[in-house]
Image (tube, rainbow, N blue to C red; front, side, top):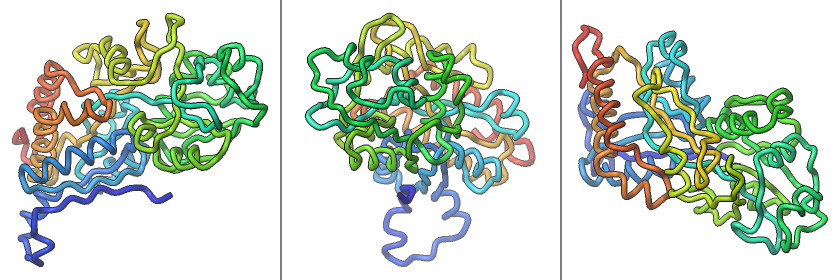
Length: 349
């Protein structure tokens, strides 16, 4: 499945065939690439931003691994990744990062006669499915958790990401925390060597496979589950109860985030404590070079995210994302002021 691209241009310019000065076009048509996890909200923000300002965004939803490669190669104005880069990695490439949005990764399935929220699953059991140890929907471990649910004697078709993916990082980071065997056999990362299953490109590809394959299970960002009307599982928390994926559960997990104490804003939100905390919650990050060779473009990137932080909370909540809290936005803006420079050393923001 081809990666989706968000292409929003200067209002009216292309339709009228107007020739814009190169500097003006560069400044307005900012480019980004990376995570598919935040694609639905970036698309919504970009559409509203274009209507409000006339300025455009071209965002390639190619996966976090691709976003990191493109920003380090300086082929885009910003990269996007759901796997935060460690402080030493940021220093190596001369980058800063900041969280733009938070949300949840959810297990989704396609089992005839079983609807959204009708299957319960724990982290260790989910790990066993992705290790190939639990192969049937009527496995005793699943049946014990789901009394009264008609689970068929059908093989489980595992679906995972085929591309470098921050969604995969969050998923495998969580499974590695709750399953020592998964940690040793598969581990965590944007790309891992899966024990079983078929790969789909992007959240879009995984959603499409799960919708098409009878007996499938996969993992996607929650907005993709909603948009594709996929059935989702309830997840067991650290405290032993089961929660439904929604913005309340994602907010509960995000409430423990202390961004002020996170070096380089490196923070992972999986397996957080709390009875209502969704276990596979994470932030999606924006990556920028500290020294900006195209200062006008960098200013437009900051204007876009500043506008989105100020005006985009209700849009984010409508898609069950968690907006970045105002105190964290202030930390982000302080980082922009202190870290971003043009080639002469002049502040960008």
